Image (cartoon, rainbow, N blue to C red):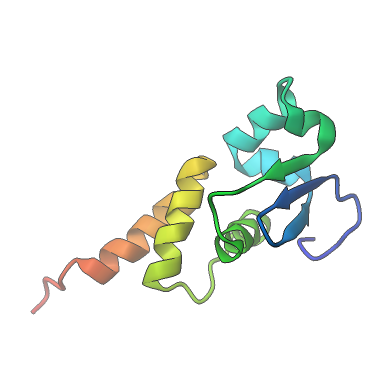
Length: 112
């Protein structure tokens, strides 16, 4: 569904890329998006959300997670940026998974 343009009704725009999305899915996974679409905010009326504080890769990975519930090729740098995106949009399960990944990378193995 992420790559499917059928029933697309919202665009997320970074400075260099536009992601075509479905507001029902965004709203189901993020209380922040839900508020944008259910209250009298400009995003509800125009269907465009400008995201200026996140890079393309972070937005793409966040959307992949929203649509598929999976994380692929996670590295320390993109996990920390994805954590910021999850925090901004209150996607608690994504925030938790990024946090777990980062803790595993930074906390020494206690089994030695």
